Image 1 (spheres, rainbow, N blue to C red):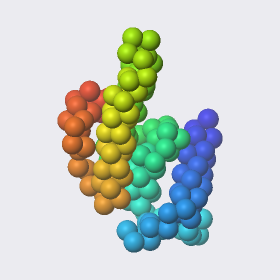
Image 2 (cartoon, helix red, strand yellow; image 1 turned 180 degrees about the horizontal axis):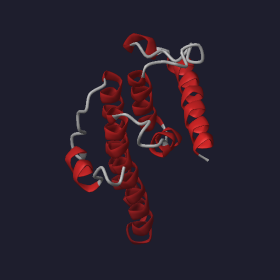
Image 3 (tube, rainbow, N blue to C red; image 1 turned 180 degrees about the vertical axis):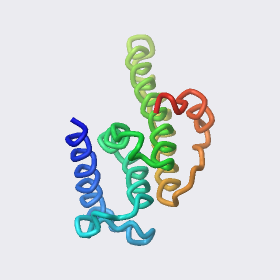
Image 4 (cartoon, helix red, strand yellow; image 1 turned 90 degrees about the vertical axis):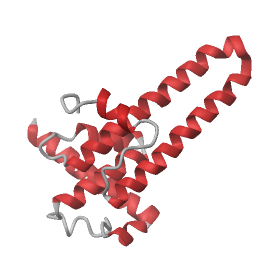
Length: 156
């Protein structure tokens, strides 16, 4: 079971980062180019940590891969950014559920409030990607402290 989890997380991370690198092409600027990932399969743990931190902000699938990676293989940067992205995903889901609950009472005008809320969540994700690319443990502006308090190390 452990070998299967290890195989899935490692291969999924490398394959996803290869596709992401082909789409974006900007990873070479920060020194984490995934183009030759299979040749550099023994790449440093810091590079893998950085890639996983970036991946967790780009899609829910990337967040899920980073979240399901065992704690022993996950670095501090990935753990930090997974914690923040978990709160962003939770708040986004809460905004969507609240919008659907308010739809019968306020009509389609409730979508304006939901759109603003989801726009703020998108901006937080962009700030998180920039922090993960630069390798910083910088908390997000509105929810960084809340993520640290609510999602302690025992949960991540």
